[in-house]
Length: 387
Image 1: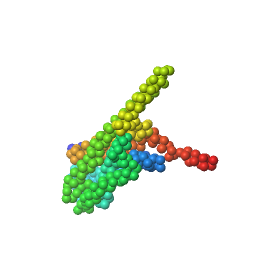
Image 2: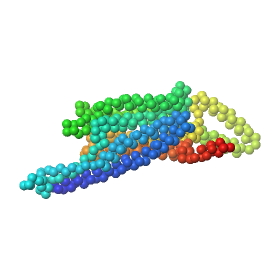
Image 3: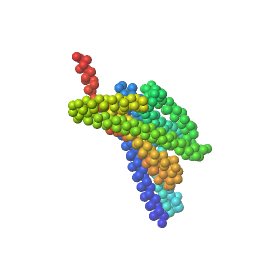
Image 4: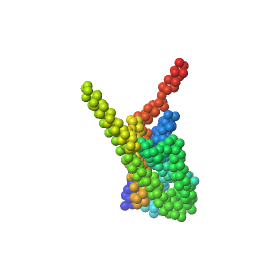
């Protein structure tokens, strides 16, 4: 009976270990893909011709934050799952006459897999890594929310807040958001973790306040996902409305031009005159409502921001629900660890795929990306200089 139960325990641990190993490989893939992609985003958006565009500055700053995010929880999972230790625990031990352990007559043998997090190597490392991880995630979310606000103010032309869209104010606001969040999380540097009486580092716990990290994780998920998601949902709904209205006006303008070109003789002149008066009236109406049609590049840039927001919401919302409400009640511990690894990888995936969203949604980004690896500008400059 004991042998069968031990065999089942070994198999279940092996299955959990296999799932954790696969998820750890996925974490490693996120690091290997996300690092060069985010650095390429920085290289593209911090070019000289893009530094005057506030939303491109925000995208470049987001790429820096996304790179740091990948080296917090994901790097910890890779080190934890590929740096394992095994311990054998014997129950009902029988000692032979020479004082050695008789394994053949022992009632049961359990194999315990010891996984050590990166934060458990020292107390200072525990506090520093957790402080950076929580702060960077929150900063990234609120910079994205500020990017949506910046974009909405720019294309809606609200006069009272147009100064926010200027380059200098954009940089100042991004720095203020970052500094405020890092200062708000500074309590982690002395409240998170402690050294037990046996000398072990217990991270993500507090010796005197047992529910400290539980409540803080819920606050973190609210700041990181819930509140920014509400703001992003409102702002991106308004942005989508502006984009759709712009496309609708563009289609109507094209249909008017096509009908004008197909009209013969005098009817064409009359229709042209009516279309001109109609366009003047519509232009006055547009000016009165403080709105304008978006050009193609501006519309594609706005769509990139909308798709980034959608991916952020889809990938982070499940982890917010799991970690906030269900994670403390998941048993056994191995299943809780596997689910935590799964949903953390899911939420950090959004910090990797933004390069591909920029590339496929924005023509301007593709052109800038090709120009980074092209010598065309330099050759043209040299030939014109020699002439």
